[in-house]
Length: 88
Image (cartoon, rainbow, N blue to C red):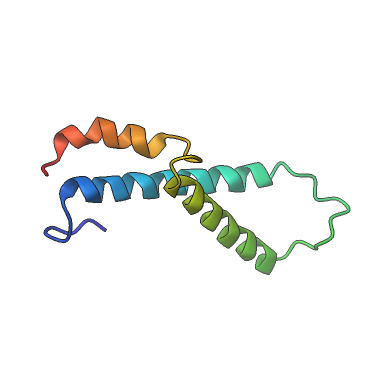
């Protein structure tokens, strides 16, 4: 949610780039989870479990993207490419 006057455009760009990385990592985690063999699993598959997993992966992805030690670097790269196009 980019709003004029709320923060500098560079701060907003950094936030959006981090959110993009978070979404990307969450999608990657969801796709990786699909490859796990669920036969003999402790839990039966259900829409509630799917919602819980989605929530969990979104939070993990947000933590990964917001921590400079665990970030995969997409946000940093996007920011460095796009910062030339924004003011202050």
